[in-house]
Image 1 (cartoon, helix red, strand yellow):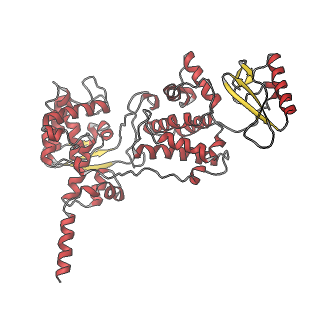
Image 2 (tube, helix red, strand yellow; image 1 turned 180 degrees about the vertical axis):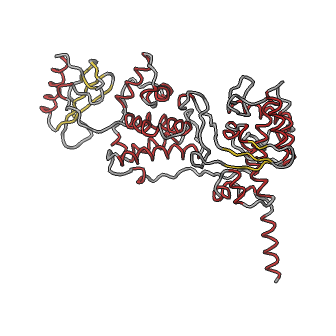
Image 3 (tube, one colour; image 1 turned 90 degrees about the vertical axis):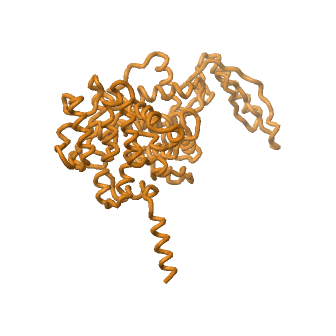
Length: 455
């Protein structure tokens, strides 16, 4: 209970908005005006006398209800609050989740938990609430650091103000959460995929509440809410052709004294065999068959996705995981063209490998961060492209090299099943994501229609 001794009273007054006589008792607790209406002036005076007597006796008044402790009903068991159940949700999912999933869950809850609070005085600003949630409250208990005094006060306010989870059964309350995930923390409209990911976390949390019998049903199913339209399809404007890709890879070698040359083979793996960045980060010498002539083979078995250290099992920025969309120990063999074989052989000859056999790491042996991979790529684009291309979305991100590889394979007629196997996709996802990047189908369709009409 959040209480105060700052209490002021006003005289009884008649309610002028009603035809039937009624009387209003008004008072203020910690600057918040409270009122209660009675049918007779005697009842109103009696209630006011009780309030004044409690104040004279030195009782604290509850800020939320405006009532002294002696007139406040004992709290009923309303079940877990949104905050406490969010903490349980995180703890339940933590062990089985990858670091990136933990991070996604946390950032969704950082938007949702502050949306489901009571209007209590002394509310910290949104940034402070998010910081306490991120760094303490939404971590498993054994990972929480000691909070400094000012942040401990923020957490206490949040624990007091957090609504009972049962309140989310009210449509108006639940919509506050949907509004919160529809904007960024800076207050701008959020990307469609971000909104949908956060809504999925909210849905999972409510489904767990149903499973735990905290809620009778998932109230999200009853809300008429139109999700933003999102698309998984790759934008053809981002896809480079082989000549452009070659120019960009060459440009990488001109970035810095050693940074670019040391990273060129990593980008080459993303283009020539469509590796994801985390797959390239996990590539070891033992995964590579690099013959003197002809095609080689990469046998992928591990990935090293990057996440904040607070979410990884190792306490490092990269946790070793199984391959995406694969069982834990399942591998993915990928034939590699002679050009990439030569690039990898030269890379190993020049830079060697890490103690654990990893091919790609900094001069100090550390994995490359996502920001470093992006930064070097942007410098290479400025070198390898003219001003107009550099300002365009063409290969704007390193990941677009992977899209270019898959698009090339599909356009030259490699069967979709083979492309899906090499890229680590299902055929269904492949066709949905790369549908706009397959060229020539419209012309073929037009020719077939013309032939049919001429018959």
